[in-house]
Length: 185
Image 1 (cartoon, rainbow, N blue to C red):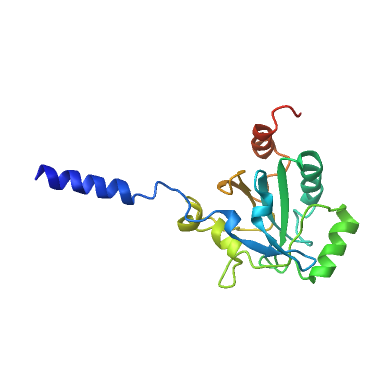
Image 2 (image 1 turned 120 degrees about the horizontal axis):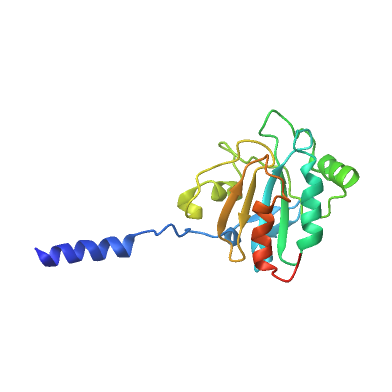
């Protein structure tokens, strides 16, 4: 009987997931807004802030803060924008229109990607990874609105998500970046 209990414990320990992701963000790619395939592994060694964006949303002004983050921390943080029309059609434009809007209105120079679905049956694989704990290790929360933010560590592991009303410059986000850049303000 004692041996059976030891075997059960051993099997349980060997098969436990321990909330480790099955895949990392680096296993995925996305199409840039210009049409190029970008493998997420190009951002290895940096933290990554992934944001689903929209041009006609009450939070659209967060592009300013996203651009500021990109300019201030681009050596240690990649800010990635993923346009989506999933919430009340607040991103109706084409990729070209979105790109022109972001550059003209907000001076966006951080990487932008083609318009995708961040939820539903046609959900982009990156957002499936971000919102499926079987893939990312712990989180099942898909975006509930535009400008939802996901933070990935330097090893491609999801470490946190932030609701739309959290500014990209909020210390709850920038403190994570400061961990990677201790000599910066």
